[in-house]
Amino acid sequence: MSDLDAYREKARAFLISMAPKFGRDARRANTVEQDLALGRQYMAARHDAGFAGINWPVEIGGQGLTHLHKITFDGEEMQFGMPSHFFGISLGMPVPIVMHYCEDKAWVKERVLKALRGEEIWCQMFSEPSGGSDLAALRTKVETDGNGWKMNGQKIWTSWAQYCDYGVIVTRSDPTIEKHKGLTYFWVDMKAQGVEVRPIKLAGGDSHVNEVFFDDVRLEDSQRLGAVGGGFGVALHTLMIERYIATDSGGFGPHLDEFIKLAHEVDINGKPGIEDGRVRQQIARNHAMRAGLDSITKRAFAMMMAGMQPGPEGSLQKLVAVRSRQKLSELAMDLKGNLGLAFDEHAFVKTDWGTSWLNAPTGRIAGGSDEVLLNTIAEKILGLPQDHRPDKGVPFNAIPA
Image (cartoon, rainbow, N blue to C red; front, side):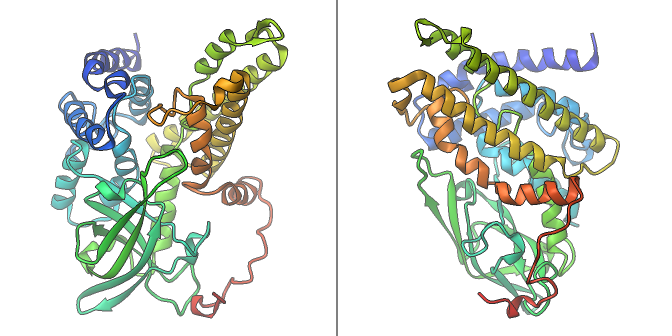
């Protein structure tokens, strides 16, 4: 038995022992607040069992194992529907970025431990109402204020901000130079004076995303991550992680096995749907696509294990996975006929096709819209020339608003 196989068995045994209290069935009737409280208990138990920070260095509070060990555990955990979704962004992007760029290592180690145990949650604040999909068009500004900074502006679509203790943010520190060069990156205390969070209710009925407003929020220079004016580079580092962390080959929708199960249950022209050639074709296409995306992810993690930076292939992963999830969810609803219109606000997005379809457009925007990803694929993978950019070389404050 290989090391990974043994690790998988150990992880599965732990998850089976946790499922009666923390699994999907145990959580079914919970409110968001009850689910969050249960999630914090689960994260503490996961940490104590040695399944937290799996691929992070031991000296910072992790387990010191490989990225493949993390993929193995995540794949097993996903099947049980544990209440870990509140912490996915926190541990996936902001905390690793703070680990990499923050110079106060004792403070970072304390934050890492609390984040791994679910005691603290971090959010990521990039998108803005007026910026569209152009991150470098952001207008949240910071100005020097004594030996620190003063921040004013607004962010939007910030996941779980209403429950967060800290966040990372990209700001405009110099509007007199090109838009990509005048940005600076910070971490923010979400309980600081001048920070206001307003939840946004989505079509699916939940409010996991938020608007965040900043009114003369004080930032110490020690909260800066990276160089003054170097914020876009830190943001790209964050997004490079996000393209791999923020999706799976199913686009965080139902597993393909769920579709095959449905195809056995429905009738098409008096025969089981699984016998219809069109249905079987879609199963084959999705299986091949998801296998290809899984290979891209494994390759990326292998590169990281070797000390290399993964390439722009993550854009391909994110683009294809969420698009295909939306199309497969639509087909599943068509196969169910009138029953496909039934809506359960407590349904789980990875097992309910209607919930998956309704929430898929959010996934096509979060972490980079389709259009942004297509540009990245065209320029970075296919080597095509850049689109014409009329704002190239122009100071940000000279660009018409």
